[in-house]
Image 1 (spheres, one colour):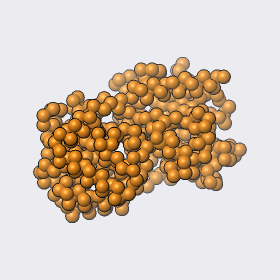
Image 2: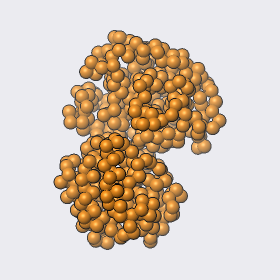
Image 3: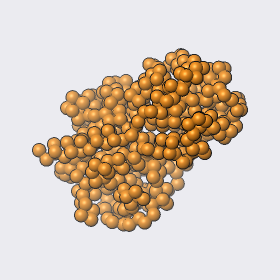
Image 4: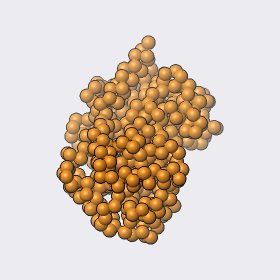
Length: 469
């Protein structure tokens, strides 16, 4: 099986997909021969020691040729990287420049990745060829189309991590992307007169998955379907749409996590982390509840609701720390909030993995008022560290938080609902027994990959069997 991803936290990460791409293939490696393919970004090559060139692949249309490098991680996972300097060796992140502006040639960049996946599947490499492809999000979805247009009968599974990001480009890009004109129709790549990488993958893939059962149901309805609900409903009725919950790896066990400033101490560890984080953000020392946000600062995440709720937290004597990057206007509002409430609000515009772990360990409550959340990982991280999520009942949040026991859920992404639930959290914090019971229940939860990895392995076998029939 070849797991194709635009990011992987071993090398470069923007969102949750990067963490999933690092942990799921490793969990699946106990069940099948798993290898990973990703772009050869500058950041990835800087960390890929011992890279060996193993293949040269031709271009098509305006997609340039590329080479394939092979590297093995310290734990033995084989990772292939698509090497093409003109597409991947540049400043910025995987998808955008240093100012957060999407690269104008992202269609070519990720068509190259998708085509490389299809070519590797058809040609193999050094006696190895994947039985199927596991594609992830729009950046890899076109691989299913390239296989279909080549007449290859190699099965593909496409996981949609966030339906809101579809890879939409002008229809004039068909020929440059080596997409046959005949594919520009409702059963191919056409999406409201434009070209959609994600819709192409959804039409041509053997099976679709999303990252929670709840989200798999939500996206078959217009509120969450982003214009694709009809196709998704059809796939669900065909038995070709599944929801499989994401997991997290064992490093998120505070009893064995060496990356935070204090190792686990059953008697005082939460307070020590809280003092450290308060000091890092310049907040006054306090024994009031500490709330946190570790998230992309974008509309989907409900950060406007958090900004409104901050006043309630401050007025009730709590404190708030925020870490993340996102929309400039939102970043500015958080920065202003911190400047106006220096003892109570701290903001870090950016992301630091070790600090994120310390924030989860320090926090009493983690705010997640997302308007939609396909799965979410932060609520899992938080609960493993004894921080109780306060979240909108949607997607994976609804599946991983038990209201009133391991966190708090509210039913609509509205300011008054969020505020009411925050007040309930303050009430719980006022009872040492209740807050202690909730922390212990949250920390006892297991979000490992074992069950989900087995479901994926079962699907791999099923789509291969169906394709051979």
